[in-house]
Length: 296
Image (cartoon, rainbow, N blue to C red; front, side, top):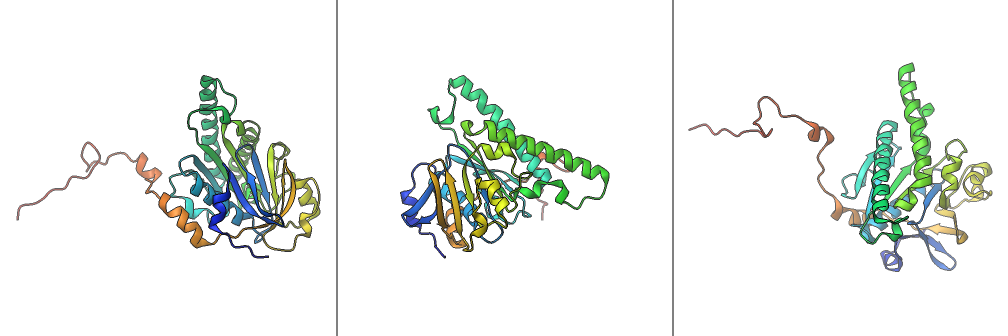
């Protein structure tokens, strides 16, 4: 019922594999460089803990080969410890910033398509030069829905609805087209309904991880069968991949282990406001302040 993570497990990882936990046969790994993943589970049962293990594993094993777009829709609390990592190129915590994040990902897809066409390859595994894997990780996708927000004016509601519909459309596009480009969607939610987990997104996810859910209907949305509603142990998950279905007890990675891996990758990033700032009237031509030393 409690399985602390042993850092020696990382030595057993194959390329782009993540250790999720253990079965009766030993450590269980999932491969995350050939398709998207959906992770579902009610609060406090292990879903976000696994996302931490995923991010930390790739920072540990592939620091120069990975980049992240983190969409943390629980007020930015889940992923704030990673926001200054050099590998994190996009960070979002609400519908508006998530919309901007998806827009940038689509621009990256366009660039990669042009590159692959130039190289004459179809998928990232065929590229000889170094191309980073880009993981878009969404924690609590249901909070993208504008109907869950406290919006009062008609103008705000219409604007939020427009962004929400675009985000859904862009996620479908990413799910259908991005995996071959080395861009992967990790879709996580507490409320896996057919409205939240779009059928096209689900159809294009190779890996499905399901912690405890409230109903058999929710379990069916993710796994195409019931069972997740019967899970009673925290950290216990049903993991479904092309290799089959396993019941796994997830590893628990504590804060000190995360900090140890994350700290070396922290960089001081300039704020967007600073980058866009124009020189003031009291600044020099370069925009830098001039130090004047008065005679004594």
